[in-house]
Length: 410
Image (cartoon, rainbow, N blue to C red; front, side):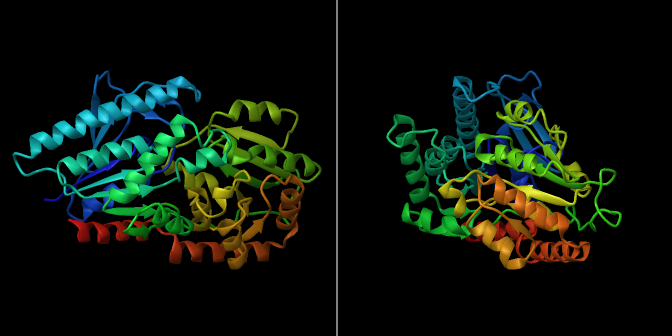
């Protein structure tokens, strides 16, 4: 039986908050005859706490849906300070020791992995995967979730000439040049990684499991929205600097006189600041993260889903937001503030409304358009969104694409 190792420090199961791309892929590969192991951190990124720690010094093993999960021990952190770097370093040291020893032991029994899949944005972890792959002559698939370190520079938190960023650029180039395959999640990233030296590139978008994220009709409403039945909008995801949520709050202020409620579901380093920023608004409600398996039913209660990001050049071509495709699958009109490929797609398929990033006036105007839109029009948007998910953004297509490429390499 062929073996696959999947590396992603912040991989999650469907019972945990956060993305589940590696979880879904691991189960699909297992169902297609592979013996799969996932190497992840025992520290959950969304909640900033340990969920799997079992007082194990090195790792805790768990078998989930017949897939081996190795939860590697790391140092925890609450904010993006020096402890975050310690968290990253501890994971990579633990990962290297685990992978090297496992390959060393299995090289005598011919049970080493056929393929290693390393998923970013954690570039050092992917580099560990590349080193092990080269030592033991194993093909490496490098999956680019975010364009590190480009994104760090574009959000203006890092200097392009800093030692840390230069090291990341070196690691990035090594991964592109020496990986057997580079997988990107956005079409706009294909040329970027090719220009960086990647020779074999495959686009495999994000997308939900359409059996879990099934179609829901729009919630029942009276003839028009009112205080008893307000128009409900939800943002679900990270509450960080790059998510542009202050812009959403500013738009909510402009819409205070209308029966519109905004829900913010999730967590992140900016959540407490956002709660304070919106403290005078009765139209904004903050909720804690929930597990992925509960997300579809929860989101189905809302009339629209908002996907927000800051005005960063990279986001015009280099993002593949999970929550956008979740909205498509559920059949919810979307509100986006991501100029470029995302806004263009929403306009082309007529599945929501769009606004420029960091422009609360334009965002408020777009939300008004959706609010006053006849239900029949929003129902048409709903059906078109679901159809787009079924034809372009099913998790099934991603898994099938990976399987095809793995069979080529192994």
